[in-house]
Each structure stands twice: as C-alpha cells, then as structure tokens.
Image (cartoon, rainbow, N blue to C red; front, side):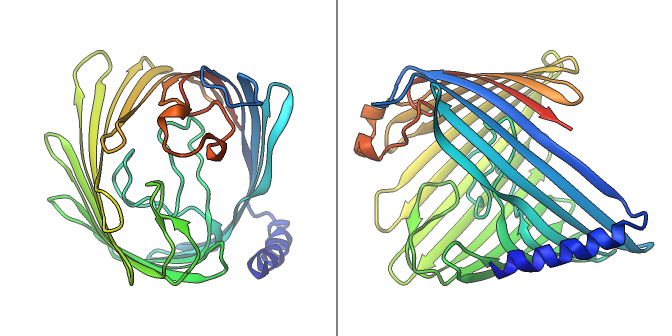
Length: 358
C-alpha cells in the first residue's frame, strides 16, 4: 500500500540521519505458550501451543530542546500448533509510524495504537484496539492512521485522526480530554463511510452501513475510583446505544487487594437489549508474584466466563499460569462448524505462558 511505501522511504532517511550519532533502540517481546482444554473441536488435538515474537526498532532525532522526531517499526511473528500440526501462521507489520513532537503538539502517521477511555474489561470505547486484560502479553493490533494531538494547556488535549480501514475507506474523527478537580472528561466523535460489515470494537456487534459515533466518558478518583463510558452509534437503518459504568477500590489486605466491577448495557434497535457484568480481583504478593481473577456474565445469553491467573514478573521475563472456564460449544446458537477451531475459549482450560522482554 502507498502508506507503507511512504514509510520505507522515511525509514531510509532516518537511518541515514541516525548514522551520525542519533539514538537507536532495538527491543522485542517473545512468548511461548502451551494450552489444553476439555472442549476439543472435531479434527483437532486437545493440546495447543504457540510461539510469537515482536522485534521493534526505534529511531529518534532531536530537532531542538523542545521538539524531536522519532520512528518505530515492529514486525509480528505468531505461530500456533494443534498437537504438532501448524494451524495458524501470521506474519505482519505490528507498528510502523513516524512522529513529530513538540511542547504543545504531537503528530503521528502510520500503523499505530489508538486507545482511549477509562473502562478496563467491558470497553464501550474499544473502537480501534484489541486490548484484553486477560492477555498476559498486553499487545493490541494497530490501525493505519494520521493522528494529531494538540495540548493548549495542562488540563486540555484535543485529538483528531484520519484512519484507513480494511476496506480502503478513510474514516475520521476527534476527541477532547479535559482534566478538572472533579475528574477527567472525554468527548469523542467518529464518522465511518464504510459499507462493508465490521465489528464495533470488542462488543461483538456488527454494523454494515456508513455511520457516526458519539461518546462521552468520565473518570473520578475519590474514596473509590469510578468511571462511565457512553456511546451512540447511529446510521440510516439503526441506532445502537452502549454504556459502561465501573468502580474500583483497594482493600487493606496483604499488599492491597484491588477489586473492580463493571456493568455494560447495549440497546440495539435490531435485536434484544444486552446486559453484561464483570468482576475483577487482583492481589500482589511481594515484588514478583500476583493473582488475578476475572468473572464475566452475559445475562442475555446466560453465559459465564471465569479466568484466573498467577503471574511471576521479573526484570525481563514473566511466568503466567492461567485457568479458565467458558461455555461449551454446544451452548452457542452458532453452528459448531462456524466456531473457531481451537480449544481456547471453550470449556475448561489450562495454559502456561512464558514471556521474555528485551
């Protein structure tokens, strides 16, 4: 694509300039995982494994005391096996962007991460990312975009963006973030002209018409932390309303037991209303070990998802043991042949993941 060709041109320019003493950083994340589950799809093995690596090259050049230009390229290798048979092999650019930053402005162009909103599990505003609190790697897909952020003051930031979708259409939008003594406020707008079916974030909802999105989010940190995300997605044929309300509090148990709950309500003119709830508890032990438990309930479909993780995090690597309990394939109204051919996310599962960061 043209955007990628432009990036390779910029890469060579910056490589030439950084040859004269400018900072260059090479880092990466490697992971290896083994998984087994009780609900095995036909023709697959009960044991699955995966290997992945994301090498990242970062270059930067100072333009003045208050401004600089930098570049980042990351490539993702990801292979999954069922037994000893390869059933998934992904290789693609993970990040590929160039950025100009000054005291009051940031402009970034390319394949990048765009994330906003205070919710952590039931994320109404997960419009351009795939962040999942249950993923130990913490990775998310990026979008091809031009994003401009302006900071008129310490309490106000204004975003705008142009995004190139998978259908080669350009969508656009913006966001304003305001900090006050009461809390943090966000106002977001996005217009998408695409006529191809696409999923609205991680909600599972699909929309196939050109549409506009309007959102308001608030976070307040008082005796307890609390937040709200609300969104209206409107098109010629349908209106979808989504709202998430959440709160968290740290109990004085051991090193601090963090508890959090979120509630999401979805009103869709084309289907029944949907209600979801989530609960999380996280307890660190010392400087290395931590436990996390997450439970999610889909009240409309009468499905419960439970997730438990023990993590040991060291300077450059982490060990993660995950136990999960999800509905079986037979509990879904979707034909089994249309469900993913993996043991992950169905029935009872156990997974071990090793992550190395350098």
